[in-house]
Image (tube, rainbow, N blue to C red; front, top):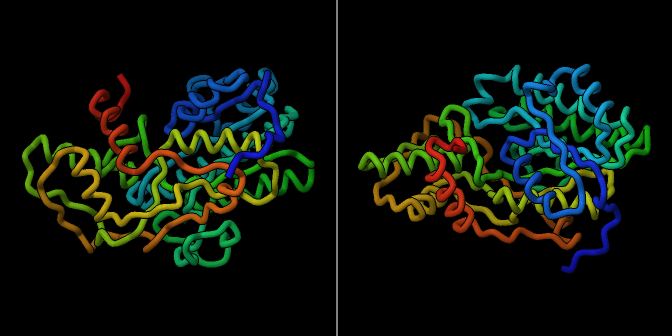
Length: 320
């Protein structure tokens, strides 16, 4: 479906990408470079986004007209399980400070980026936007999910009380260049990519994977997500959050095989069923975004190839 005419212009705007060094923020900044706007950023050494006074002082001085809330404390099942207070406090503080700061400095537009984990563990699949708050969350990431739900509700509340053009987008599992490959805190795709690469390098016959390998997951290449964020900034102004995904799913076992094919690893996989699987299935219904004229362009295997190329050029997953 062809995209409609933009309802909000980025031309000449000062756009603050909060979290510009992260996976999503970095990609959004690069995508915005194609627009006729000024991208502004600030490093953690200068402004701690968890500190209200620092955020509000900086925003009062720079006066961003558009705010992209891509900053967050993130991680996989292990990180969520061992650092629940950080995941709740950090994310609540960051979003509260940025959203209120945008109100105080009269920002024209704000987009808050959430996560597909906001939906109930046993939500009907694919998950529509109205599934949020209809059932219990997945316990392995509930702290992060609660913080993200609060961010969505803040945007809705600020629209209702102040009439501000604050919107929310809910990306699915993201991956790509600049991802976190630390096995203690990374998500499943980059963790598997690193494990398989190291197994190939070491000549290991087996790679161990947490869980049964049966859960179904949806993945979206981060540059596609960044393009969707820009599309929503220009084409969407509504109260309800919008799902951002590929609309396709794969099992963890199938993902492992795809990664092995890209890496060139011919060993096997051993699944540790004593470890948690997380949600049995997590696929977003992306009909609303598709109706706005946007859909993902990068296939999973092509995205993994691009990510692996980046990983090889950046030992340990860190840019050099």
